[in-house]
Each structure stands twice: as structure tokens, then as C-alpha cells.
Image (tube, rainbow, N blue to C red; front, side):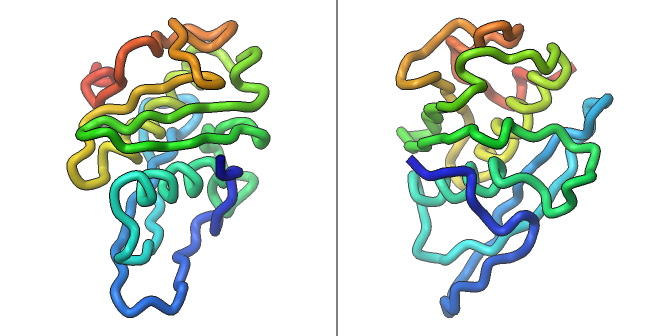
Length: 156
């Protein structure tokens, strides 16, 4: 599993001749608004590797530590695997033991995860598991996680 490492809002140039842009979405605290940040990924990344890269950038958080964006707890780790049009994301860390951020922040976290991954080519859904197990919700959480999340999950 990769740690939530990344370039914190900056484009990564690994010296590759062909690259493409990915968009990472963050939820703005206190609203339903999403904020986008763009990252450069090597053209050789596709499928599960590209999904893992996108999730790693999301977990790294924005470059502005004082921002009003909702971010996953610092110790959150994720393993992403694309299976057809669904990306399976297995989360680990304190978030899988207890979530005290409130329903709005929780929805914002998973909205950002879902919008980031469904921006990737061919991806329409995200199935979240906690420490390898599909659970009804986060411990102490509100959002149902036992079915795949889609952009429509967050439509109002």
C-alpha cells in the first residue's frame, strides 16, 4: 500500500516525454462545492497504477495547509485497484477505527474520492473497503459504503 504521499498541489515532472493531466477534487468545508487541483502523470500510468497515483495525490492533500478544504486524516493509507469501470479502494489508518468529523465532512471526503477517481478514463464507480472488508459505513460514520459510490450518490 502506498502512503498518502505526493506533490501537494504541484505538477510532477518525472522527465517523461509524454504525460497527461489528472484532476484531483477536494471538498470545500461548509459547502457542497468542489475545488480542483491538476497533476501531471506519466503517460505510462493507466488502470490501477493511474488510480493509485490519483488516490495518493488526494491523500497528500492540498499544498496550502491553511486551506478550508476537507482532507483525509494524515495517517490514511489506500490501495486502489481498477476492476472494469469500478475502482476498489481499500482504506486503512485511524479513519477505519473511528470517524468523528461529522456527516458533512464525511460526505465531503468520499465525494472528493469519488469525483477524483470517476474523472479517470473508463471509471464510473468507487467501491470502498476498510482494512480489506466492505463495511456498511465508517465506524461512527454516516455515509453508506457497502455499495459502490458514483457521482450520482452525491447529487442533490
